[in-house]
Length: 589
Image (tube, rainbow, N blue to C red; front, side, top):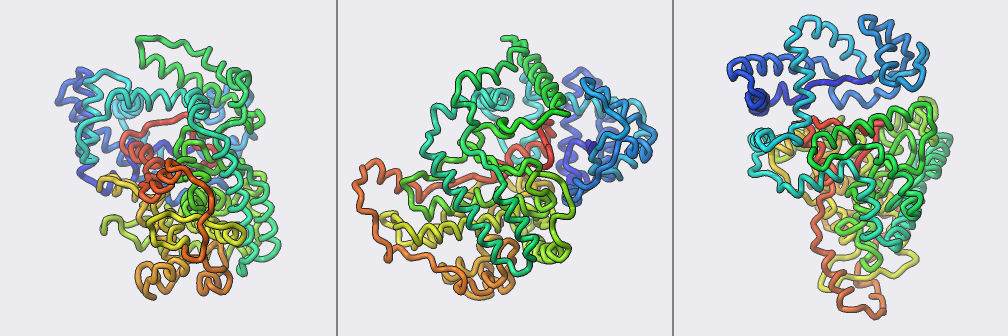
């Protein structure tokens, strides 16, 4: 049971008068379109925004909610702490198919918010409370309403984001279909655009990256043996799902799963009703999962998703087919430097999430527990995490928007740890294999590895998007996802001859999931990656088309984080509520 909060992100209410003004005008315009009196609409809109400001003030900041998984209590204890609301009765009404007792465990991440919420609502008028509830419903459904309402919404977004125009209608329809029928589209996408050769290579890379991560863990001098053993057990037990669900290979099986849509009454002329019917079906399916065993065959991401994720409570990573394509994954014909630099680091990133500042709280079974690490190891982990937090807090996006190192800590630990694991996996691969080269390039394989890593984060965004992301996005800005990781690598500094003390070769470097002596003097523990001139090109006959395909990889521009955060950033403004989310935290890459 968590805080609902206001429509905008907490920090925007106190940090951006421009956005608040545009948001208030947006509410007024929608109300007038619904035939409200303009003067009365203005008055009530301003009252509503003031009410939301009060909610924002008592809400717990995102950066302070990393330890909320341990805030568990029984339904009886919750009712004792907050006796003014009939909690058990309320939850029982929602989960009507099962019995909710006083001993039912509940997680309450923001108890302080709930305690203050009653006082705020007690002093608010019925009109304000009604408007708050109705507005939260209306703004979610505006994309499904008539052109007049969509135009109002688009004007609001343009004011805030500085964009112009609106998405083409067909793109909106495709996106909406993908949102609500993603598993059906995923089956078609997987069958037509994904081959098993890609899956086999990705699975093999996961094995190599996992082994490299475990070797890095074995080299940790700050962690005691019992904790190292526990970490190794969890890494070994971590499951991985690659490409698409196995049941897609059986028409009988996937058609059986798609039978759920037979219960939905689709109407050819009513988009709004169709969406509500799908929402109702999904909501009911979600509620019925209580008391049932986890369906391990079901994926939390659809195969066509250009993303990846790790699930804490299931100890599994999901690597969909959508991300296993250029510029992240160049396939079997590309130099392994490019493959490990991009998708390899992504695989390592998801794996390392199992051991970041949140993942470390879950054991190998996905159970929330406090005692599977020794206190001494926790102390040293905290010290190294503090180094990472301080490092990223020193960065400013566009020179003025300060990154929140506390909010982004988990992702930054995963970025650094994943990069190190993939780097080591590539080094190991080089010991037993001959590398290919890209014609016309003078870069060494080592340099190409770093370039490929950086290209995976190429992106383009507007200033307001960047500003909003620094307030709420748990991922660092793409520029600093690259600079932050590479500036912690003396190997990178050596490869590109960065002077000591320069921004990309600072005196202080942070290390969590790699030994300190590697950061201080990496040449002692790692073999150098060999330059191209020391490696023979494969003496294989390659068709012109294959060579052309290989050559094109050098100019790939990825939008890794934007693929992942574009929805999150729009949600900051429009607060689009999804049924699915957020389990124990499922972390997007």
